Amino acid sequence: MPDRGTWVDTHGHLFLLDEDPAAVLERAHDAGVEWIMCPGVDVATATASEELHERFGDTVLWSVGLHPHDAERWEDQRADIEALAARSHAIGECGLDYYRNLAPKDAQLQAFRDQVALAGQLSKPLIIHCRDAFADVYEVLSGADLGERALLHCWTGGRKWTKRFAELGVSFSFAGPLTFETGETLRIAAKHVPRDRTVVETDSPYLTPAPHRGEPNEPAFVRHTGETLAAIWGVDPDEVARQTSENASRIFNRA
Ligand SMILES: [Zn+2]
Image 1 (cartoon, rainbow, N blue to C red):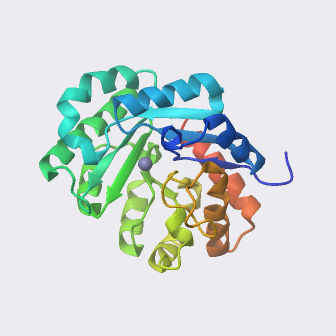
Image 2: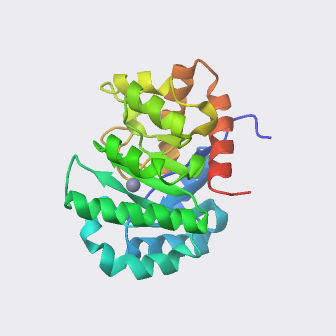
């Protein structure tokens, strides 16, 4: 065991970074990041994510899904997504986004319900985007029984929804907003998550945590969110690294 904790970035869109991913992964390695889940957001980006897995092995796991912003493309993409899903490590990123509402609600719900069902059929983890859509995401997931394999990425719920989703048995992933000055509600919520079902992520290249705000985000920065979580939980950062990495490996079936 290394004496410094190693981290897992459960959500990094490596295909969106401007640099050669080898350089990004080297910095991640130097920062103690053991592996990264790279979620596709449509067929093209899932294919790019699979190529990263082929190039870098189990340092990069990949998933396939259709982002809610593009939900109107579901019928066009569905067959290809299902074909990729047979060999991906997870389904998603999918979900509901009623904040930006870039696709109509009924299209978002249809695409989300179908991808939840796909994860159930294949017994694979599901990466969920939930923005201002807590009640509907709760309703869809409560009929699915995915347990901890349903991972709420970049969790932004307050205390009430955190408790309700925790009772549903799902998992939670915290991103950079936990470190923001404006993140107080989220830090209160973070006290109520089940620690054995909590992971951390960057959502690279978005949502760069303090103290790197203004720079593009990258997996090497995941420890800042983890260290904030450690302060909230009142434990050592190495303990959060150990616990969240163990949770991530179990949720994503990585040995
Ligand atoms: Zn994402």
